[in-house]
Length: 286
Ligand code: SAM
Image (cartoon, rainbow, N blue to C red):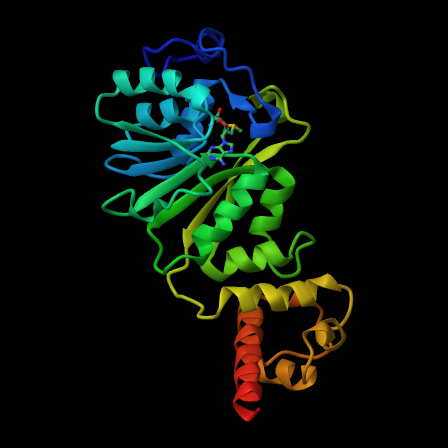
């Protein structure tokens, strides 16, 4: 295997800095630098790009990104034990690695870069999903030009699913509302140290060129109602929203007999907008 840089192997780095993996931080490290370079390449063209990396850990993916030619990595890591290992990488790539020791859930990433940023992360699912929601909800067009994120394979399949797919549900609608998402790489449990129980997949999300305007909270509300009873027809499943369900479905241009799993993202957006119009009309009348 070709060596991607002159820094020590990650196993040595982890041993030297006592970075035993902590379950509470979802630490399953990637130690194969050829693989991390491949993940970096899967995120697209890298020259001149600034990457915000969330959860660099001992720096496997960070090194992959830097070796593949990104202009700069801004790395946000919560575990302060990782800083000395990351500082060694920063010294090997002068001016190209900035380390932010913080919880990514509390960092406002919108102003970390001057131009568009690419976000790359191998994070625990419980952190990646709220971060993903925040990145989708923010002002549009977003401050990022792509997201390249590692998920459990089953979650990745739910993210990229389309109407009619078995995995299609609330997450796919939310993601499809703002992005085009695809799985770009699959990884077996053995790719990580320690091994997780399940396979993983890298998902790439690109912002939709044409925006589908609607309120995200309303979109979440109508999809929760529709998929809460996914086998039921829409007219029954949406009863929990209250009000004139049939009129709402008609306004959205959908069939009352359709089931949530058959309705494309655009249909849910139309439903969310019809719901907001009906709500505004009710509050104006009262
Ligand atoms: N990127 C490294 C790799 O691929 O080997 C580490 C991946 S490990 C799955 C997840 C990393 O995210 C850990 O280093 C962990 O400490 C970090 N992490 C977990 N929660 C975090 C949070 N809320 N903010 C920032 N980093 C976090």
